[in-house]
Every structure is written in structure tokens, then in C-alpha cells.
Length: 505
Image (tube, rainbow, N blue to C red; front, side):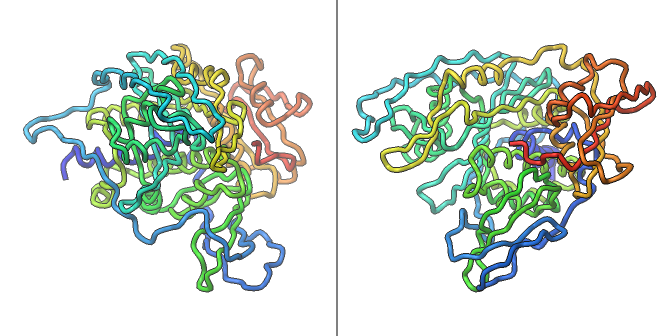
């Protein structure tokens, strides 16, 4: 297998985890994955009422069983997904990765003429919104929209339930990611009002210019004022296969999650399972269940869980030597994604990923404060966007990061679990990393701390990150211990107590 093929598959994994996920790997100590919990997922069938569950050691609790439809259906084998195969250079050509990105394509698409009168439905009480202003995009930026699709070759209806929009400045390097809710009710230009997760399907079925990606791009332009230079579409079956190839992933579960497992037992009953807060080792099917479960939580919670799964994939992929492992993966993964990214651009993204640290990764989402619930004339519950509230978020996503961010000193944070609850330090480390700290998990001196404390080793709190850490973990001044130590390798120590709230959302 040639160098291009090997590197291409390595970057497939980077695209699935780096582009789709929030690159928290670089802000973690290797100790985060040191305490995996392996578990049998499916509970034992029970036709009689299930007693009050007790938490097993692995943190997965089987609960009630019921003849109810699952939230999604698992397939025993992945189904091939259409692939856009990039054309490599001629055999005689030698391509050398460069830190200098290739020229970007012209900003696309141009605005299509809109005919509003042919698409109004008499029963829909929502008026077609006015097109929002097109947002300026820096010539130095590369924009990518990444879609997670449940499409099958024999299906005439599918959704893209994961929509992540990325703005990448390769020379900084920096990445901003915007999570777009699947239920956002928007105008599909010259078609209809619909959820944004149907744009790809309608664009393909109606032969829209550019297909599904073309209609999605026009939809983003009309409703949010942004467009994507490139797209990547991934089949959900690919997530299962990739996680299993990695040997499973370790996911910090902050909030208890209980929902139906989608595969019935031998009696045809669907069981509920529950994941308790802690660090859980997940295989592909459990990771997909965790990232797609929605019956007992909100769409915004599901977006956070999707990011957690993909962050865990990124960490696990970086721990392994991908360039040695991917030749065996190539025949299995070549059909798992579709993209118009050229090979040289994929290499550039890989180089950008290698240079990133958490300080240069910014995560944004269109949340509950930027939308309102609405019931369509067909009875569907959707989210109406408020552009005035969304616009400042878009501004932050698109802006180039300040040059002085790269010169800021890293803040190393020692994390102790001062409770008897397994892996609570992993949960705290995960939260701290998302605010730019570099957490290092260490054993605590004891495990009976009733309250969370911070030990500060610096000389002055100014510019130390102490006030922010107090805010994140709700630690008042009286529980901050000043222990000046210029020789300490850490700026601060976070001691998790029994009062720690694992689910902050």
C-alpha cells in the first residue's frame, strides 16, 4: 500500500474524530484513559417487574424491560455508503506535506434566485424568513461542514442528525466548531420550510444543483449567512466499526443516562439500560447508543454526548500509532465516508491537527437561548432560530483568534478525587480541559472530603486562572488554600469533594 493510501486512511480517522469532535486530547494527561470499565451491555431478560436497580461495579444499570419500539435499529453488518474517492497524484509524482495550505476554492455558493410564492403551505403558520446577511469569511480560513447520516442504499428517506460546521485557520493554527441542532426549522431555498437535517436528503432526491451538499450549503447561506468550502458525510455504521477497531473508547459520562437499548432480547422485549456518572469503556454499539439516545434527554444534551464520544475517539486514535495500523483498516473503511476534500487538503488538515492544543480550539453551539420550540402543521416539534441571538455566536465562530493567544502560558492543574466515587477526577479533568486548563490526575491523600477545595501554589491570583476555576467548580474564597510553592509543577490543585455536581447542564 502506498504512502498516499496510508496517510489518507489515517486522516479519515482524523476527520471522524478531529473534524467531528472537539480536540480535547491535547489538553489531557495520559491518565484519563487509565481506568477503563468493561461491561456487558445487554441486561438479562426479565418478564416480571424489575426491582429497584443497584449500581454494578461497571456503572451500567439494567432497568425495565418493555415491548416498545427502540429509538434506532442496529444492523448486524455495516452497509456500504457511497464514497467520493479522491484522485491521487500520478505514480511518478512525489507529494511532500507542507505547512503552507493550498489555495482555497472560490467562496461558494452564489445565492440562488428565490421564488417564495410556489412553496408556501396554506396550513403552515410560520412565514418564510428573510435571508440573513452573508457573513464575511477570511481568505485564510477553511470551512467544512460535517454530517452524520443514517442513510442506507435502499432508503428513500434519511436524515443528517449530526451537523457540525468548522472554521479552520491552518496557519494559526486554530479551529472553531459550531454545533447546529438537527431540529432547526429553516427555509430550504426554493423548496419548503423543514428541519435542517432534511436538506441533504431533499437536495439528492430532487437533483438540486450540487446534490444534497448543494442544498445544505444554500440552506446555511440563506438562514445563517455562512457557507462551507467542503463537506464530509459519515455513515453512523462507520462509527460502530471505527470504535471497535480502536478497541473501544473511554468516555467521561457526566450525566446519568437511561434509555431503551435498541436490540430486543430473545423474548422480543426491549430493555432500558442506565449509565451512571463516571469513566465508561464503550464498544461501538454502546458509543452509538450513547451519542444518539434522545427519548429521555434534550437535543442539546445529545449534541454534547456526540462531542464526548468523538473526543474519546480522538484520544484513543492518538494513543495508537495510526500509520502502522491503518493498512489493515483500509479495505474496511473506504466506504464509510463521502467528501469533496482533495487529498492535499486532507494532509494539510492532518498537519493542522498535529499542531493544535486546546487553547486554540473553540466550541460553540446554537442552544436553547437562541431558539424557541414550535409545533408544525404536521405535528412535528421543531426549533425556530432567532437570528439576532445567533448572529453573535456566528461572529465568534468566524473571527480569527487573537495572535497573543498562542503566547499564553499553559495552566497545569493537579486533580485529586477526594471521594469514594470512581473516576470523578476524570469528570472534573474533562470539564477543566474544556476551559483551557491542562489537568493531571493524581491520587488523593484521603477520600473523605465533604467539599471541593482548590490549593493555589502561585504568587498572585492575577492571570493565574484561579477565579475561572472557582467559577467552574463553584468553590468560594473560603475553600481556596494559598500554599505558595514556586517549585510546584502545577499552578493549582483541585480536590473534588462529595458536594461535586457531576452533571452541570
